[in-house]
Length: 123
Image (cartoon, rainbow, N blue to C red; front, side):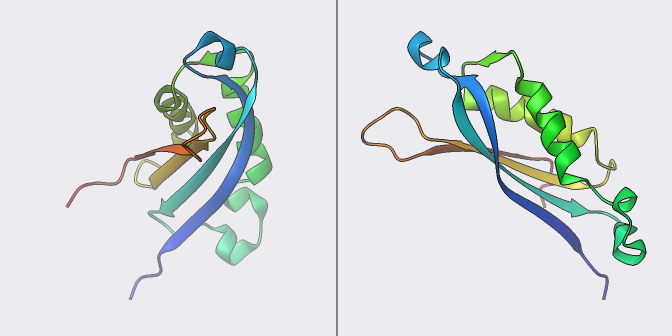
C-alpha cells in the first residue's frame, strides 16, 4: 500500500478589500483560507526533518498576503482564483490543491459564505 501525503492548513487569515457594494469594498475585512494539498510524492521532509523539503507556512502566508496587498476584489470567486493560482506556483504539477475561501458577509440572515476551487481530476 502506498502512503498518501496530505497537508491541510486551516483558517489562514488575510485582510482584504472585498465586496460588491462600494461601502463594503472600502473597508478591509478578514477572509479565511483553508488549503489542502495532496502530494503526488511524499515530501522529502518526512525523512529529512528539513524545512526545505516541505511547504513553509510562513512563506506561503507572505505570498498570499502579497496577492491581496493594495488590491481590491469584488467577488470571493475572483479572490479565490488569484490565491489558488499563487499556491499552484509552489507545487509540483501532479499535486492536488483544494483551496477554500470564507468570509462573513454583511447580511443579517447569512453567517458566512465560502467558495472552493480544486484541480482534482474527475473520475
